[in-house]
Image (cartoon, rainbow, N blue to C red; front, side, top):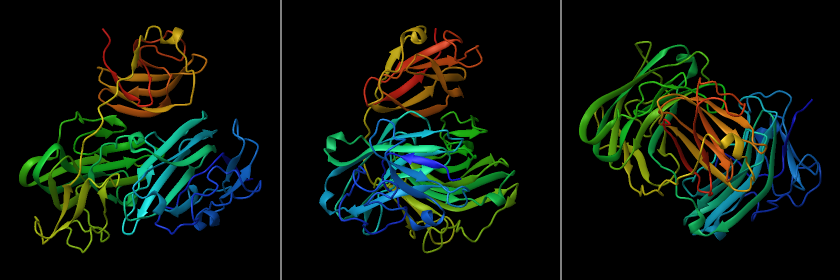
Length: 479
């Protein structure tokens, strides 16, 4: 029997550049259409339909919303592990303007890995802007959470796509969608961006083995950052990182491992030097990505990449590690958010081996909004005094553990009860999550008897977002 994921709205998805499917935003709020049918104006990619997914309008199971769309997934999830309801329309009326797409989301009865989120993309004649994600993470819990995506439509834009993307398992809902033009002042400052080259490493060649990954790097006036290498090994669950190194931070088994914020990449102006990182690949890994990064100003060149697996040189014809091919073979290159701040391309004027190298150059503006401070709460009184009150204004919050030990992070629910959201956040580690204005959070030192019961454990800090800007929750030792 098919399981059903309820979508009280929708958005859009095609992951390749496609022509408009409607002449203008159509039936965005699902206000028209027959119950039990796909809403007019919307579509699903054919390969998703062929895999057994479908969508249908409903009036029940929508909570406080009057209409919804249900994602019906196949009884067996095979190669297609996500479903999108999409709409693409011409960008012409929006050129020179800022646009905003939003929706309410929730996911119920999900096992590890299920989530729902929204995206938006602006396609140009020769490039795409995205996909652009919400600044807050995908929704994987039963409470209604609001998500929104912003974009600016530059000259030359051809089409705009909006979508809701559902990754089983669980029952997913989307409600009260909206697409509109907004003033530029309402668009949040862009998050940090960087130049990057990304490749996917074959799992079968690395499972249970140790990887040594290196390259020659040359720099010119790299400031406010560094040029380096990165390698990430993902686990089965969404967001689970088993091993990670980006020449700045380092983790093994999901825990910090000598990644103390010391730059191990290239800075300033320097001739060619060799840089390398080494990481284990656990047998339970499900994905491996790696590449090069320029996080800062200036210019960096990369060449002569070498990879060893358990000490043996690794060669694969899908990669050109010397960058002598007409394109960066095996790598996707660009800015991490298609921000236009970085230019990444092959360079035939500078190389360490052969005739070409990969060049990353900062060409934009790195100015960011200053961090916003959250309201600090007295941790001794959070249990007895505070509770979540409303859920109309979503915010992003970043917990930064600058204390000497691991901490547990609790959300205080609408009844004033503790709900454990993050267990054992290690010293120096960071955890980002979504929440709402008026929602209190309590931080308790790990392994001090802290439980879901009021008053337990050594309570270090309390925080509550007071504006939609959110902010950094910096945790220190309490004296």
